[in-house]
Image (cartoon, rainbow, N blue to C red; front, side, top):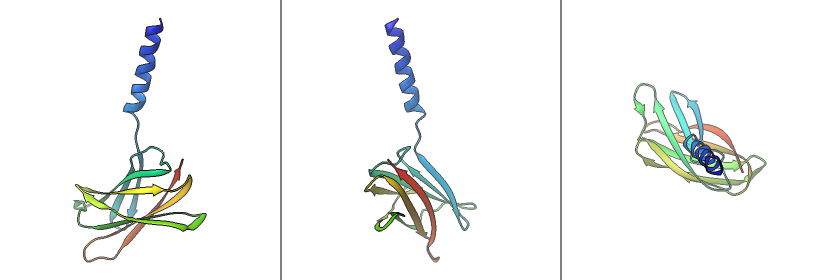
Length: 127
């Protein structure tokens, strides 16, 4: 009986790992759809890997843009950090180093060749 309990307990924990997903946000900036993914379901104090994908309805992924992330706590605007995202395949990657728990606003700014910067903002609550 004890073995059966542990088998079911193990299956339960394995199923939570299989269905675990990261933090995802999709927003529009003009004619571009911006998909942001963070590797953790709930962003944490410390390093959080971020992926930004820029999608143009007619052309698919945009891979020739300059992408920057600025993040800050609304309650403490002096705590402002910036990082450039590096292109990797069809997306851009960066690391957000969240210094403390609480709400953070993240501005994703991107510039395509021959155009001006566009921006979207989303919020995360770091634990």
